Image (cartoon, rainbow, N blue to C red; front, side, top):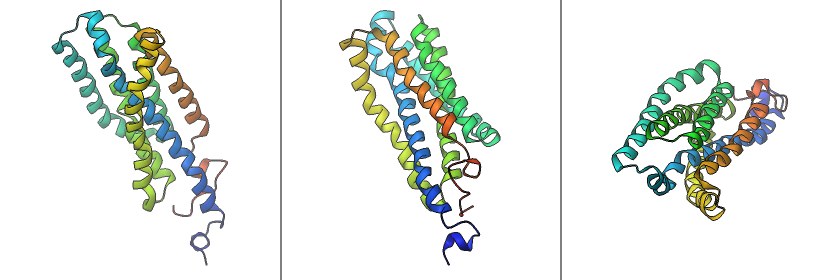
Length: 215
């Protein structure tokens, strides 16, 4: 008797979930790439922004500090929020907040404006990891959750690698400027958000999979 049959689930349930759960992991990976591109951009653009606005190192340190503070607090709040509303809604809310925060950098003209944009970015990005873990817990058996978490969290490193390659290309080589670069790099995130909202369901509610036998 197979494990699926012993659990009372159709024999095909496990492979169907097994195939599709990596689509979910791919969405999480992509979201984390955007998460870290958005986070790292101000560091790459720091020389340009310091030259234009005359920032001191203290002013730049304040901008970084408020982002980190908002990010830390958001971890606590979003963890509760995601447990309450679920992975789909929790991740979508986080994604919307951090994308708005990221793209709003294009409109600011002062240190206080950058602080406000970074705080909004930090609040949104603090929800990414808790929601990702919630999604992994819903879609993956215990024996694979650490691996799936490692896969989607690898997106942070990819984002950190892509940012210093992409941002100078857009802002300098293509002469789009830093404001337009913030806007352009925010647009793909909206497509990823749409894909998340369209594709993500809990396994038991998803029309393309059967209820997993490991529940």
